[in-house]
Image (cartoon, rainbow, N blue to C red):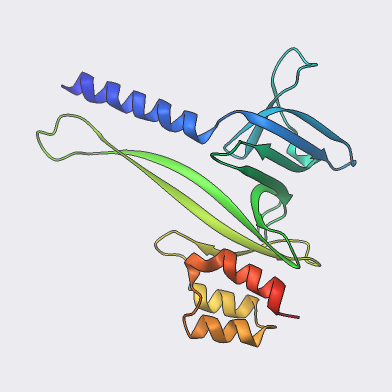
Length: 198
């Protein structure tokens, strides 16, 4: 029975890894202004590239990259990743761009799998997966992005953090306090700011 559970764990982990890191056509923009197309995949904040003109795949040097545009097709759509400096970090990281405007919104996705103990007699380890999603906002004139929200259980108070960040738009702050917007509406909040606030 333990062997069967171990095999189920390996198959689950393999399928999870495949779904998290699929190859797709990409357009890569470098800091020097040049752009090239290839096939790539993103995993653990690293981007592996396959170019038809090169014999082997390689990882991008992210310090040279401005953006990577993945084209996954109809089912998953396009995803734009940008090199963003985040407050409290020395190096820029790649974040998915959700909204672009006076205030841009970015998402950082971390997939995790943990193996834990099972009740007596259950026969083998229990596997759980969970995802951590962090959201960052950046004003057009700011050098670094600010962490605004997370789906982690003990993350900072969203209403206070959002009210502080968007304090130059009283209408939006009022909507946050009246609970017309909450954390799950983060994309709509940033879009509202870009369209309705001066």
